[in-house]
Length: 277
Image (cartoon, rainbow, N blue to C red; front, side, top):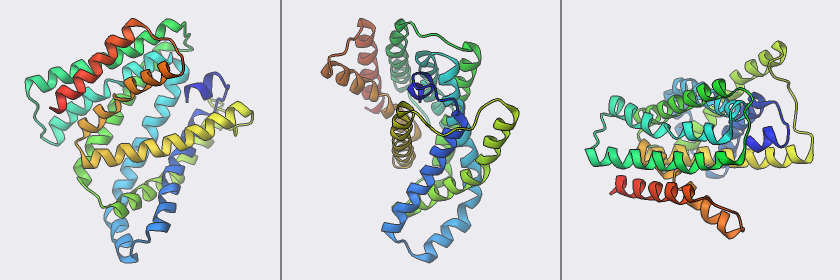
């Protein structure tokens, strides 16, 4: 998303996020065509949970739009670093809503993992990034951390566990709600002049928009499913393991790394493993 907006000069952040949210539900509907759940189970799921789809859809849309806009307003490294605070907010909301209790060592390892993620990300700031509106971008990034953590914990509290077809039915419902409400933001932003409405046009925009769309759908499916089968905090901490994976890929492709990267990755691995143990 950051590359799409900065390197490819694509300015329709809200519209792109709206399309990703709709694609999330449309792809789930395609999966259901192959799974062929019974009509009665579909009707029952819709009747029981359409209200929650109305709750989760705008919350998810707001969080994703905020992060997409934050990547444009502040530096990528700062936005991603502040977003790492999601783990701390997940622990806080889990304590309030799920009555989760953590021992002192678990909290220590949690902070170690978050600190490692922040350190590895801040290390990239040496690349000389510039920001358009850093304060606004930082505030949006913090807002993303709060909204995303609340979404994960509330999702776990409401559903706890869903069968395969039930999960995709809810995803399709959520995408349908996004389709119905998101266009208001697209039209409103275009009418106010805050954001132009445009489709990807250049080769760079088309390539990164397509890649980002598929990645977004798969990522959100995985995160929502992991939230249900694990705890919200375990699901969130598992995302931090992407940092050492990225580090390995960087080495394999001949990229450079900094000493802070090594420290940060070590802290992430130690913190995640220590928390789960």
